[in-house]
Length: 430
Image (cartoon, rainbow, N blue to C red; front, side):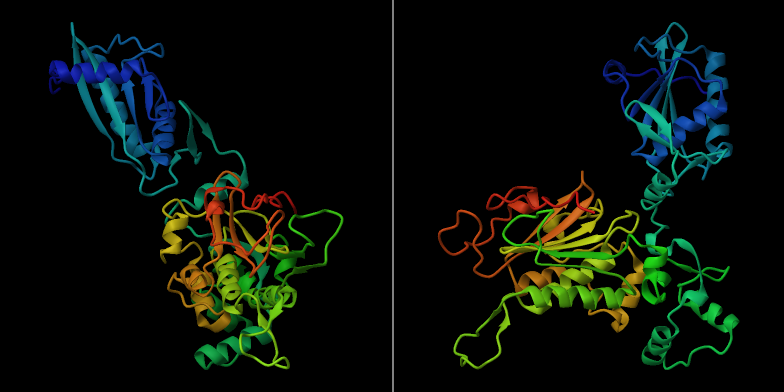
């Protein structure tokens, strides 16, 4: 066995300083390790999180008795065996033997952040860090939520139990003819094969979530939570007992989009263009294109791992579009305003760009909406798992206003309150 490195005094001090900080989500103490399954669970939890370091030869109370030379040989062999045989997918770990003196050694085991999440132990259990401890995933919903962090997994690929017989054949026929110049398949086998090739169904002939949302005749029969709930309230706040207009929109994605857009347009004020005659038709107070961009963004980029409806709320001074799911971790409000994007639902995005929705596939919808109407606030509520776009209406006055509305303060983007109305006031509605 290679002799343990005898650290310089500064290195040893750094090691002892780390130990003195105690256990947390990135540091774990073990006086000894003998059980391969227990060690595998610790490795899996670190790999599924941000990585971490295990100090073997350090007791829970932070004392450092170290390991004997024979223990070091045994533990290092166990570590290599566990990392390759007890973890799926195998992970590459790094160990360092640090001599404390008097023949005692601490093994510092570094487990990197996984690049192929999720990781399992050999029994198929996913372990996650929970502070200084770990826990296993116990529910199906939590499992699906975790899978979305895998770069190989997307919510719109999720299988369903819906067969191809649920397809809206006329809608799919028109799409095939318009986009590819193809006729509707003559046989069920040909239809199933075509749907597989378009990434809308699995090998067993069941539509995936994208196939259901795009082309099922009644998507709400399978996923009733993925609808748009719209309400026009009087005044500036939501009330449970009074509304001016209310409707739920279900059906294939393009129908939901068209119906939700029509709801907005019929509840917007029409204003006379400057210089137009009194007999000229009015134009919407906010350009229609603004809501096209925001609705497409909500339908295509929402988090379909969250079982909740998109909410469309209209008030005297604003329109709120509330989407389930916060922004992906690599995005911020500032980044999406600049035109950055993240492909959360690639199948939906690709079909939306095929003239199913007015979608350009360039990740610039938010930026285009702001160019048309700068008075829009965005709020990324990570705790509530919601993303809200608030469009402030032209010349609207909130409670206490005495003059025209000033330029947007952008307080909603940071969770603030504007004109005494919290942007997430109606978040608890169902």
